[in-house]
Length: 616
Image 1 (tube, rainbow, N blue to C red):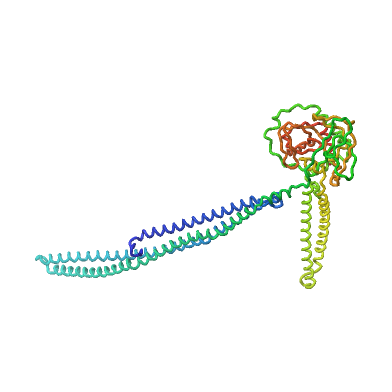
Image 2 (cartoon, one colour):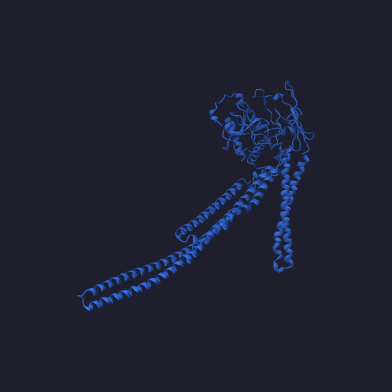
């Protein structure tokens, strides 16, 4: 079937149909272009999503990704990044193989279509011109025949009239002959024009138009084939990335299967194990006898070994708390569910407000020299600001050992880097010596000297940290009852081992009474581990407070309180929303200011501020 023979008279419809075909092709190009934009947008969103949940470098969040579950999540994020890359590949391939190619093809198609229909219009104009010529020749032949008939009739009329002269008759005869000759000439011309038109018309409908329409048909068929190939390419582009996407999904599945809950549990133990043992049983202390009594060996301030002992005098025994238990302030608390001002203030007894303050300040001001108090105050402030000691002595033994080992490993890596640089420079110097034209050997001497000094400094640092590490590893097996008791305390601050001036004793009802006559000498042997902190003094109390709400102190540096509980204030809110309080001689920490109602003693507050100014 050919458009030239079947559709010889449908020139206008073919023109509309081919234009519609080009419109369809342009619509498909627009569809593919929008698909590529969607792929790019999807890939960008996937990359942003993966980047959003990536751990920040050199942050605490990065340390959390050592567990198998978080490692699997990190692997998932990386695979999602590769997954996004495949969608970018889809967009790029569709743009180059479909959108770009079809856009160029549409331009060529429009030019070809324009050329074919121009030829068709030209052929139509030519046949129309031939038809007009035929019509003009026909009308001229018809007109001449009619003129010849009228001239013949006029001649016959003149010839039959006896009143007309011979001259007039001859003239009419000649005119009739002339008209007949003109009619014959027009007839001959009409015949010639008709034959020519028939020939042109035959060529037009059986040669020219079929050829033009055949070319248009081939053009349209190529367009249809091309759009079909583009649709196939559209599917192939997706199909090509399916294996890679499948690998990404397989890697995600593999990462999920690599999660080991037992290993994660073991890593939690390694991360938070303190190295202490649980506290033992507390011995019964009999206070019913009004006589001198010795503190039990299993109490919080008992003997801590068979080594050196130091006589101390004091009333209530103060078990020294490890310095690493509570030092730094916790992060800001969430706002309280109700305003503290909305809670009515309960009456406070004079004993609970005044007597403890006087005794605590007497103890603070008379038990040690003032310079020792200032030093303790500055030490507490420095720890509060987060300046940890270089030897990590503020950490539990097991955590301290891990930190020291990590520091030693880092220093060894730095030494290896410096040695590699030194070896490289040494080789470079040898090359310069053998080939002076390549460089001056003396130019690297200064750098080699610097590297040697750096290596020596790093080695000294390694020796220092290895010494601390050996010290910790040598002490880890020692497990005394006192260490077990101190490891079980929930919250504490670094304080001295005993009270230096024991003038107060807590009575069963929570008040303090002076029982100086009942105090006796008490021996407190100290282990080597505790000797470093024996010169620390507790901060003085500057008031009391009442817990308005129950607070679960789960963060480092906080302390748990129950609603209605009375406690002592040792440091007021500095504008960060936290107040430092003390429950007893052994337990203190931070609570949200909005959770407590504070009653400050003016004199105590002024003295505390004066001590701060002096210490600065």
